[in-house]
Image (tube, rainbow, N blue to C red; front, side, top):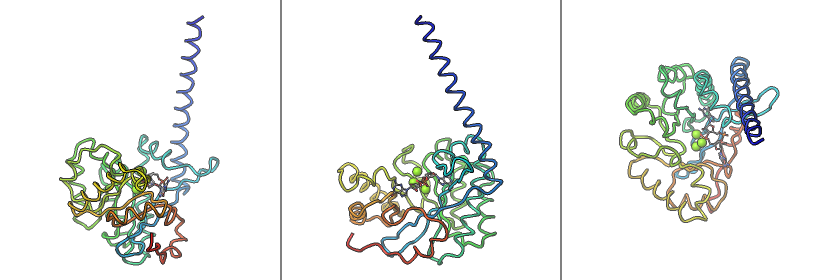
Length: 278
Ligand code: C2E
Ligand code: MG
Ligand code: MG
Ligand code: MG
C-alpha cells in the first residue's frame, strides 16, 4: 500500500513538472509572438536628484500586455526570455525604444535601461548600443545602462572590457540591486561605475531598523569614497526619504515620488518637486 502511495506521489510530481514545462514552452511561443506583434511597451519611473532638486532621469521598465492573460510581470517573463535566448531581441527593442523616447526630454534628463547578464555578455552588445544612440540621436551621456552584480559571475575579463568600451563613448553604467547578489566587492576596484543603486530591501526598513540603516550608511560611504553616485530604490514614504537625505544619498526612486508611468505622463511629471521638509 505504501508503495502504491509512493508511486502516486511520484506521478503527481511528474505531472507537475510536465505542466511547468508546458507553461514555459507556451510562454516562449507567446514571447516570440509578443515581440513580432508589438505587445511590449515601456513604462518610465522618475529618479529624483536630491541635490539639483528635480527629476534627473527615468528608468525604463518593460511591460507586457498578454492578449489573454493581461499584464505579465517582468519578474515572471524575463527569466524565460533569458533561458530561451529571446532576451537578445527583446533587449534590443528596449534599447531602441528607450533612446527614441528620451531624445525629446530636456537635456539634463537621462534614461536608464536594465540589461540582463546574458544580453550584456552577448556578442555585439556594444554595437547594438551604438546603433540605438546613432539612430535616435540621443547623446551617449544621457543613456545609463543598469547591470547587476551577477554579470561578473562567469568571469570578469570580457565584462570589464565591455564596460570600459561603453564608458569610453560616454554611456553611464549603474550597478543595480546592490547588496543582494554575488557580493565579492573586487569588481568595484576594477571598474569605476557611475552609480550604485541600493536595493529596495535595505531602503524599506531604513527608518525603523538599525541594521538596515547601518547597511545603507556603509553603502553610501563606500560609494562616496569611490566617487560613485548613489540612488536609493523603492522609497515609499517620507520617513525613508528623510533618512536617505540625511545619509547623503544623491537621488531616490520609488512610489513616494511616482510609480512607473506611461510615456505620455512624463511631461506632466517633469516639474514635480519633493517637499523640502521630508
Ligand atoms: P529593477 O531594475 O530593480 O526595477 C525596479 C522595480 O521596483 C520595478 O519593478 C519597479 O516598478 C519597482 N519599484 C519601484 N519603486 C518601488 C517602490 O517604491 N515600491 C515597490 N514595492 N516597488 C517599486 P518591475 O517594473 O516589476 O521590474 C522588476 C524587475 O524586472 C526590474 O527590477 C528588472 O530587474 C527587470 N526588468 C524590468 N524591465 C526590464 C528590461 O527592460 N530588461 C531587463 N533585462 N530586465 C527588466
Ligand atoms: Mg533597474
Ligand atoms: Mg533594482
Ligand atoms: Mg530588481
